[in-house]
Length: 225
Ligand SMILES: [Zn+2]
Image (tube, rainbow, N blue to C red):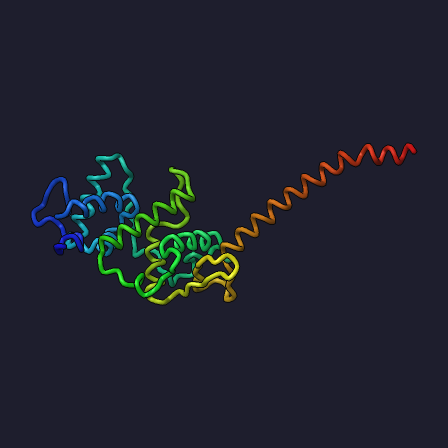
């Protein structure tokens, strides 16, 4: 395997159509810029030696070609230490979904921690994220958890800044973010029990309505008798 397949090395000479030396990196880039247009993150994930300016101009050109929207984020992005990071139960629920997709049945063991091949690591991240998006959202919907947030979440796990809990009840893996309630509970169980409760309530209301209508003649009978 040559070095170019491990990191996204840019073409030595500027090319109007391509940014990367290796067509496989070109393909990854095509998918990646639909998930994030943050140049710093693209550099980090591809390990490319292309400058931010060069990446930006390629994104602009590609988006113009396909009629896509340029959404260049400003600033450093959300950090996992910030108070709002995955603070809502529904966000924790979806984060848990991503976590379980990402780590699979074995969880983040020692083998999962070592990802030396940037290409393989990026392929996995993009595949997991696209799967999450396809499973939970319609085509035109904006997922609650952005690709960037997912990457930030993985960084937090790698840096041991956010412990992963295993639910004894449903065996989901979930994170408990800093800044949210000290006492944690499984977001998957919590959302599901909420759904079950809501469904039961609806059913109860329906049943009592039905009971009322069927009860009426009986009451009349008693009253007449
Ligand atoms: Zn659970």
